[in-house]
Image (cartoon, rainbow, N blue to C red; front, side, top):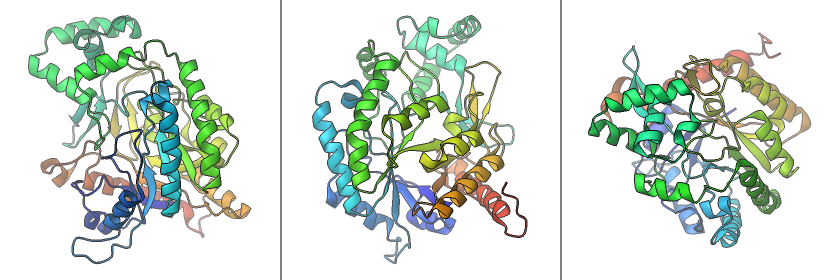
Length: 405
C-alpha cells in the first residue's frame, strides 16, 4: 500500500517540508486554481510537480505528484448543457497532458454542485479534539427554513422536520450565517465557493434531472473518457457521494456497492475504476467496506482511509468524523482486504499491485487547534491517522504471523 498525503498547493498550511517529515511516499494534489471545464496546461502541471519535488531550502523532497485529486467534471458535463461537448474534449486533453507528465492515477467525482457537505467544521468532542460533523437536524433547518427550498420538508422524516422547526426558532442570525457557510463551503481550495444565492440558482438547473438521467449522463462521460484513459495507461477512479444519500433534492448515484457495479459496467476497461472512500461510504449502515474491497477490488485504484461514527439507526443519520480506528468501519478488516487484493495483483503480474492510499481527513488535536488548517486536513490529526494505519499494515503484513486470511 503506497502511503500518500493530500496537498492543496503552495498556499496549503501544511508544507511539503511537513509532509516529508510524515514519511509518506507520494503526493495527492490538483490544480485547484483552474476552473472546471478549463484545460490543465502542461506548464501548470510541471510547476506543481516542481513544487512537490522541492523543500523550502531548495533541496529535493524525494516526493512525486502521484495521484490527481481531482480533475473536476464540469456541471455542464453532468447536466449535458451549454459547452459540455467542448468540456469533454478539454478533459481528454488534460488527461493527455497528465499522462505526458508521468502521472497515472486520476480521481474525480460526479456529485452535482457540492463535493462534500457538513454542518459543523469544528465539532468539539469530549476529549478536546475537534472534527467535521453532519447534523441531520441542522441540515434540515438550513434546507427548510434558511434556504427555503420548495418541498424540502418532504425530504426528511416527520420527527426531523419537527425538531428542525424548534431548533431554527432558537437560532440567532449569526448561527444561521455560520451554518450556511459550513454547508456551502464545498471542497477546500476549490476554484469556486458557492454563496447562498448561487446555490438557489444552481439547484434550479437540476430540478428536472432525476438519478436515472444523471446516471445516463455519467455513462456518456465514461464512454468518452475511459477509452482515452486506457490508451494513455491512466487509471481513473470515481469518488463516492459525500455523504452517500440525497441532499437538497439533488440526484446521488455513487453511494452504494450497486452504484459502483453500475459504474464498472459502463466500460469494462481497467482504466474505469474506483476511489474507495471508507469515510464517505461508511456513513451508511448498509455499506460493507471490507466486502466491497473483496468484491470490487480489481477496479479500486485509490483509497481514502478514514472513519465516521454514525449517530443513529435510521437509513439517513447524523455522523461525525471519528478517529481512524474508532468509527463504524472495521479498519483492520478493510486493510486486510486491501492486502489480499494486492497479493492477487502481484501474483497476476499487475504493475499497479501497490494501491495508493491517503489518511483521509483527521481530527484537529494538539497544535492543530491553534493553527490555521483546511477543514478536515490538519497536520497532526492526519499524522496520527497515518501512524495507526501503518500499524495495521505492518501487523497484517508480518511474514511470521500469517494473519492475512
